[in-house]
Image (tube, rainbow, N blue to C red; front, side, top):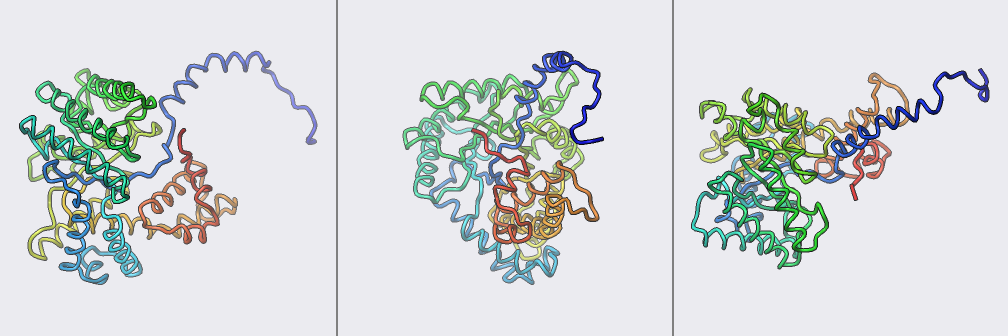
Length: 426
C-alpha cells in the first residue's frame, strides 16, 4: 500500500467524539489522582532527633560521630568491605564516597521530633522547643549549613494530644515565617494516622495557614506516617491507604512506615519487630500500590539495633543495617529512617553500592533503548523510565557523578529527566 493511499475505516468522527466525551471525567480524574513523579530529589533517609536534643551543631555532630565510628571500627576500605561483604571492585570507591558524604552532607533529611522521641512535656517547654526548632532550621537554611530537607514530626490528631500537636505546628510554621518564610525542602510529618478525617484535618490546617500568610495554595504539604493497622485496613474491611492520600487533597508528599508501632499493633513480639517482618512487608506492599503514580513517595522504617559497644557488636549491627537497607532498595523503598550517627556509614554504603554496581548495565540498556539497538534485553518505555530513575537517584545522593553517567549513556541530566517522566511540576 502506497504512502498516500486512503485506508478504509468504519467509525465516524462523531463516534470518536462521543467516546472522548464519555471519558472526559475519567481523563480528569486520572490526571488529578495520578500526576506521576514530582520531579524532585528524594532523600535516601530521614534522621529523627528529639526536639530537646536538637541543636545548631546536630547535623555536623552526627557526621563527626559517624566518621569516628568508621575510624575506630573500619579504618580503611578493606576493613569496611570485609564487614559488609562489599565487592572488591567497589570497596575503595564506596568507602571514599561514604567518607566524603559524611564530611560534606551527613544528613539528607532531618526531622525534629515532638512525638514519641520527645514525649509529653509542660506546654511552656514544648512551646519553647518548637520556637527554637524554627529559629535553628531557618538560620541553617539561610547560611547554607542546613540539610536539603528538614522539618518536624508533630503529635498526632488523636484527642489526647491533638491540641498540643496543632499548637506546636503553629508555633513552628509561624516562627519560620517570622524568620524569612518557609524554606525549600520543608517537610512535616503527621504520625499515627488511623482515619482519613485526621488527614483532612491536617490539610485544613495547612490551608488556613496559607490563607493567613498569603502563601500560594498547596505550599504546605505533609507526610503521612503509617503505623496503625487502621491505616492499612479499615473497620469496613477495605484498604485504607489510598483514602488517606485522597484525604490530603493533594498535599501528601510521602508515606512513612512506622516499624515498631505497626508491628506492635499486630501483636508481634518485641524481639521480632523489624522492617523485614512479614507484617511489615504486607503493610509496605499496600502502601506501595496505593501510592503508585500519585507522586506520593515511600519511606521504610528503622531498626533499633544500634551499632554501639565493642567492635564485634558494632560490626553485627552494621551488617544487619546494611542488609535491611539493601533489601529495601531492591523492593523500591528508596528512603528509610536512621536513628543513630553510626548507622550513617552503612546507610550510604548500601545506597552507593546499590547504584554503582548496576551503573554500567543500566547505562547500556538505556543506550540500547534510546538507539533502538536491541541487545539481550528488549526494554519498553516503562523500563526506560525505571532505568533513568535509577540513574537519577544515584546522581541525587552522590553515588554517581554526572560526567560518568553522561560518558556511559551519552545523555544529559535533562535527557534522563525526560525519559523518567521527572518533569518538575509548576
